[in-house]
Amino acid sequence: MIELIQVTKRYGQVAVLKDITLSIDKPGLYCLLGRNGAGKTTLLKSIAGHQNITEGVIKVDGKVITTSTLDTGVSYIENFARHFNLPVRKLLRIASEVNPSYDYDFAAEMMERFELDGKKKFNQLSLGMKTMVSTIICLASNKDVVLLDEPVLGFDAIMRVEFYDMLAESFRKHPRIIIVSTHIIEEIAKTIQKLIIIDKGSIRFFDTLQSVGTKAFSISGLQKDVEAVTRDLNIIGWDTVGGLATAYIFDEPPKQSGSLEIQPLSLQDFFIQTVGRKGGAIR
Image 1 (cartoon, rainbow, N blue to C red):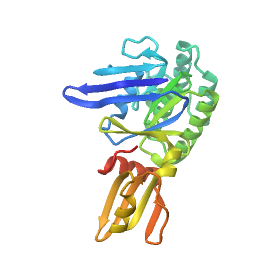
Image 2: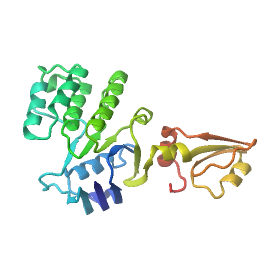
Image 3: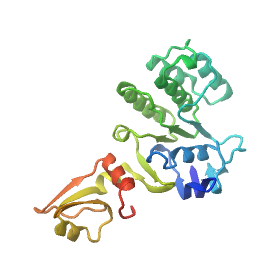
Image 4: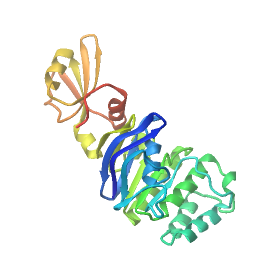
C-alpha cells in the first residue's frame, strides 16, 4: 500500500508537488500521466525514498519513507539510469545476489526475448536497450511496489508491444503495485487498470480506465443546445466556433438527441482536456 498525506515538495521557492493526499491500496497496473514538468518524476522519486519531501508523510506498507529508510519495499529506476559498465548478464547476476527475492529466471527469460547480448557492456548498448535492461532489473526485483519512469524511452514500436506483454506477464507472476509513467497514452491503455493524472504538482484524476470509458464524452451542436444539456454536468473543456460549441464532460452523458452529437473521448483526448484546458474540476 502507498499512502501520501499532504505531501509537498519544494525546490527553493518552487512547489513541484502541492499538498498531495493519495492512497493506492490494491495491487494493479497504474499509469501516471502528466505534461512535462507536471511533477511525475518528483512524485516517483519521493515514493521510492530517493529524495526527501518538504512537508507531509509518505508511507509504503505502513513504513514512513525517507532517504534514510533502509528497505523501502520499492523498486525504482528512473530514465537515463546509469549502471556499472559491466556485461549485461553480470549486471543481472549482481542484482540477484543483492536481493534474495530477485527473480533471475524471469530476468534471463526477458533478456532472451529482447535479444540482449549478455556479453555486451552496458555503455555499448543503444538507448532503448539500456532502458530495457533497467526495466528488467526493476521488474525482476519482486518488490511490492515497482515504479517505472518513462520505461519505453528509445523503444521502437515492436519493442513497445513486447514491453507491454512483459509488464502484464510480470504482474501475473507477482501481483503488486506497478506504476508506469509514460507519454505514449493510447498504447498503454490496453495494459493498465487505473489512471493517475498529475498537473502542476496536484493530482487531477485517480480512477479506473472503465470510468473514463463510461463518463468521458464530447457533446457538440448549436451552442445554446449544448449549454442547455450540460448546465448541471461536470465540464472539463469547451470549444466554440461561431454559433457551434463542443463541451467535454466527465459525467453521466445526456440522452442522445437529433440536434446533438455525443461521442466518447479517447484516453488521449480526455487527458488533453483534463490538463490542457480550463474546465471544471473532475469529480
